[in-house]
Length: 457
Ligand code: SF4
Image 1 (tube, helix red, strand yellow):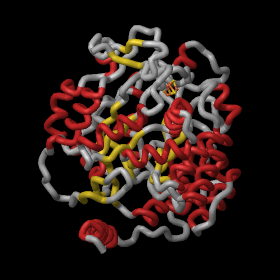
Image 2 (cartoon, protein in one colour):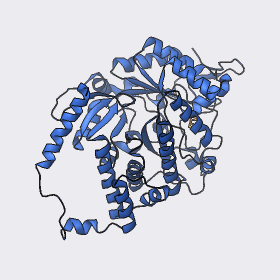
Image 3 (tube, rainbow, N blue to C red):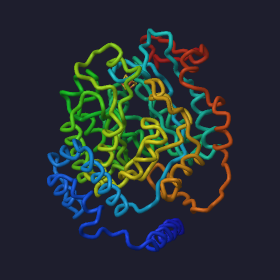
Image 4 (spheres, protein in one colour):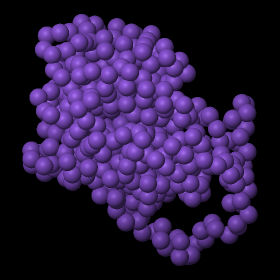
């Protein structure tokens, strides 16, 4: 057992002792608590019983849970919380990281994306190498262990751009983990450079990419993808990029965007598909449910998709997270509640419904901010720890791939770290809305020059 494992074990033992000193909480026949539990419908009770006994639930059963309300939903959340405790204990993790969305110029027009701009638009930006490096270095100096790099797909992009950017950062800051390039970007880089997906991923790995974000998944159903984002990477291509990455030893996250045009049946099939992929390749580090942010999304503003919902309700957010834990928990033990999408309060509440991670500090959250999310671009580590402790759990900083870096004891007064202090003046990090107005990083399109995307110096 490593010293860090021992820290986790100690902290959890302390919590178990505290709980066992409050006897008399087990339900007895005829007690009000039993009458409360009797409100659960037999079908949901049967599914939860099976899940709690270690059985793998089917897509049909998952769909049933994804429609649960009232006592059924609360029981589903309680079962998810129990399975979370069994799988990963009481520790709740976060990662100190920074997003670098180096361009918003994109040839695609995904209906849910308010971040991207076409190359003809005034608000297109493209960060030059020195600015990307400056942001990475600043993050490292403030204690970040990861930069998450994702961006639009600029027209006529140099196919080697992602490989070159990775080398640039790794050569300057070898210890920084690069969590970069979605399956859509990997596919674009491969096509633009004339390589196969496998060759391209091999080059990225050699350059120093540590893991891939499993974004661009939305719902892995081509009929639905054609409705919300025609031209988006196909389901089979997404699976090919992800499984090839896993085969090459590059871990990835997994995601699902929900609360738009999909049904509980779509959500259930998506979860089961991810579980099956994980059984085959084993490379997913976590699952992150992502609520659709509708306010500025083109498909919402222009009414492009019949039956589109304005994001999920709070109950739906609870259903999706709890069901995700129940379906995926044994295959993918880490379930993230995203403060970016759900806000601090709901994300904290989700820690009682199966989640065991609060994601990253981010520093420059842009994509959800552009779509109208109002939860800011940064959460300092001390605030993440406050949310975790108030949920009765044990905060721990993790690496991108869920190695525990530091466990924070319950009564530890660790004081503000460098990023906590820097966050007092968050304006120093800039913002998406300021960036798209700045002339300094304005995108200039130069057709036919290979590396056609170029910022004005
Ligand atoms: S989601 Fe990505 S690929 Fe789609 S428009 Fe936005 S930046 Fe482009």
